[in-house]
Length: 413
Image (cartoon, rainbow, N blue to C red; front, side, top):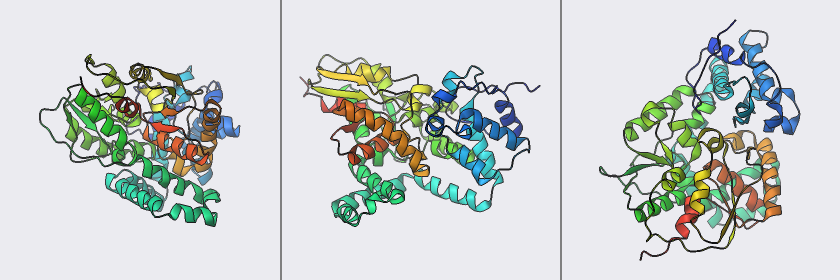
């Protein structure tokens, strides 16, 4: 009998051998407790689209009873890696590390062209310069009226094409330049990552402003590097380790704060970065001076909780503590926060149909509740929600919690 392989609860995955993967898979007793909690299974009612089914496929492949066909690989790739199954598993199966490892093993033993293609396009998404270029393209696309031309031609209604114009429109809203702020005596390092300027520029600017009003000095490194999460979840653990090691070289030994939940969770997997804090946790734990006053605001705010925040960072209690500082604000959780919105890193690009179906569940709730603002701390979730909200013709804003806090700052007394 195989001895169960124990792994710490982390978003990252060590490089696992096939034997290690099989030992992880063998911990699953196929009880089915995961089924009601798996978003892809609930949408398809297909056993191979469930955690239990995917584990059985991995076992069949690792023991030689099944070949790694495109169909089998497709079932592994269609997992959101939201890890809802881990929260309810009575056998404590480390499903996230198992699936990350299986994807890496599948990619390593597959055709060379597939490895090169995956490495190239995922690598491009992990480069700040590439994403900054996309943000400039998005502003050009919206500013020159190309979006209206696409609408007149009906291209925005083509299923395979429609997502990309909408993403560009949303990216044009979220993009904002980030100016490096090197400092040797700062109180904290602010982690920008590869997508910070293009997707969370407003959150970064708001964090800097709030920290300034709290008397905190912020350092923003001149080099914006990726945390490695996208590579890790796409079967490229060596590239992920290199990216995270570079982060450790830049930020190791310094107080590090991040505005994106998935980045924070990934960074914590490195010993030198294990104390990385999510910005709402960091700000909520600070002593706020009596002179720092937030102006009242009327309106309904729904709090979206990303999977990485819910299952790996201990939840979003700090978000509610921060927003409670704004007088008059009505704050409530977005219903079904335990269900993934479908963004899941690069998933919305790789599996657009399933991502759209899961997003529609959220949009149905948003249409009914009609919030003024939705707050979330994950950039992919924010972009995904914003795409759907704009497509639905809703006026709901999607913000990072610190953006809303910064809006309500009054002049110092």
